[in-house]
Length: 172
Image (cartoon, rainbow, N blue to C red; front, side):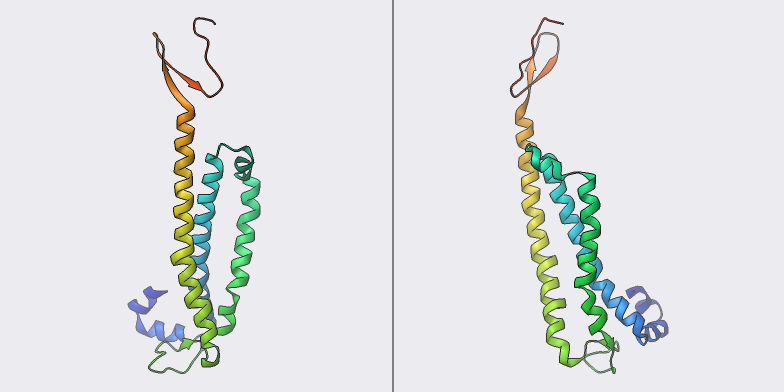
């Protein structure tokens, strides 16, 4: 979308005068980053569940759970960001709005709170915080799993001993 702006100013002026383009452009600018950051966070949570030693958490890391969550998250974000389709419209070109596409002044505070503050807090604070927390938890799970399986020296070769199981040497 921004490539059009820099490549050909006549096409940019024409597309900014289209109401459909105005709404869909701003809708995708709001929706797509929120979707991608949510899916990355869910992937991190899935990795945490699959690396856990608890059976209940490992059961959450299944394809059928993903098949439910992915469309659900998509639907939630589509509905949550639908205000962009309603609020954004073609506006008279002014100094503060050189594009011609914006939010009417009576809805500006609402749009600022939802689009500005929420978007910045969600993508700038909440998502990185969740990724850091689950990244640390994944690291802890992997370290804990490595401690459960330790190498044992046998005269012939290395074997591995796990919690609660001691291999019997010399028997077949």
